Length: 313
Image (cartoon, rainbow, N blue to C red; front, top):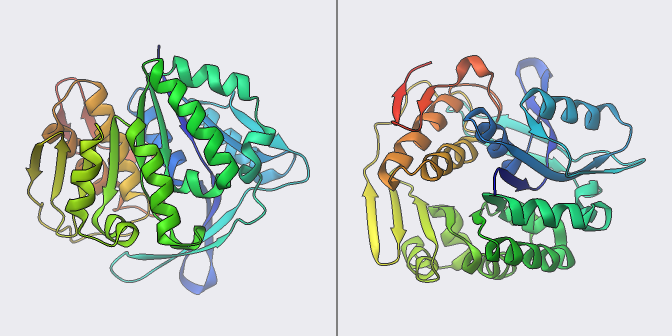
């Protein structure tokens, strides 16, 4: 086995600036994590559906090639275009998202994709990564097919990693999102969740959700509102205290996605959870000092995941 398969949606990203200007980029939660995993030395293939001949789909494929991400699992739909989202930021770098994604071809991923090729890639992978956004955009029928593929991948030895990443506008209700997530969690080796996501979906304290999901066999990483991190495996809980707040935050977009990438890369390298949290934080802290979800390579911190030495860019 080898490599990582990440599944989900990549969109056109408009970062709104002063005077009505906007910077065009390309991003999406599982795609952002895929980029950072590739930069941390992993072989990554990204599974999604794009348009057939539009310049935006072409630019996404060019970005994948530049980042060393395989496009062999990308399906194409003639006459369609990717989804789009715009980011508006306040003075503290916190952001609001505005989406245009209802007709994006990823919603028909399993009608467009080479399912035999995707299934083969997943069962041969070291890890398969999906998110709550993945589950939402695929719809009920797509989620059922995805569960079948994830079950086969787990049976073959792949580690399933899942970020709940709850986006209320993508779901009919919080209950629907929770039910979809809890269908995936028992298959997972790693589950990542923020405190607000857990409480919004489960309508109970995030720690209760963490305990329940850990009992299913997953290693659950809970990113708390106070900036501490709790990692539970079985009945064991590691609590990593918060770091002092940063004073130079520019844009928090992609913080959780980059955290996931470095955390998972460290765990795959055999590092313990506390060290994986340190790696995740270091990468996320670099990302939020820049605009957009995917930062330039020059802004990447140096992470030696074998020894877990962490240095500034």
